[in-house]
Length: 183
Image (cartoon, rainbow, N blue to C red; front, side):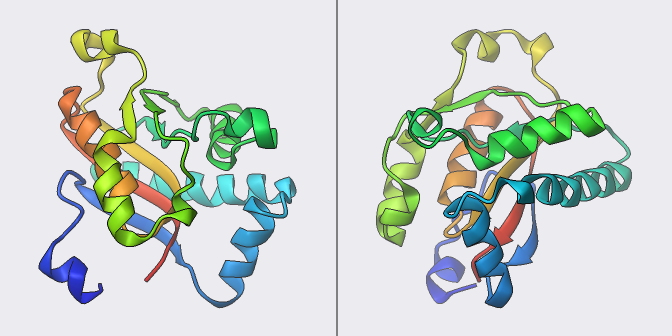
């Protein structure tokens, strides 16, 4: 953790954060190939790694936990033709019957990679919303625990903003799972 994160922790609403890989060396190249060069053949590989992590977490906690994907920015799928997390969730659902709950929507069109740490932290709470306001009222549709899924955790602002919203919905435990963490 950097000194700023130690002094002012970002992750307050998350009940556990589980990144699979650090964003270093060959792993940076792997993520770049997947996201930027659009080598979609990596999606099943990442989905399988995430599935194993999901099952491990479920086994440790002795419960089945649905996955809530961090939503893409508005227009991303239209502009690029796909979203990495959406595609991984497709594989998780189709191949391993993982329950995917699209409880969140993104409001901000800004790309996170173009923002510095301060800008990310300032905008996190207003960048996301509950996808359907009726979900916050219907307690029967809200699970007790979820796994929030993202591709990369850089500052933690995205997963913190999303976790806080999920907790406002009535979800008691939010576990974060990511493919990569910038450390």
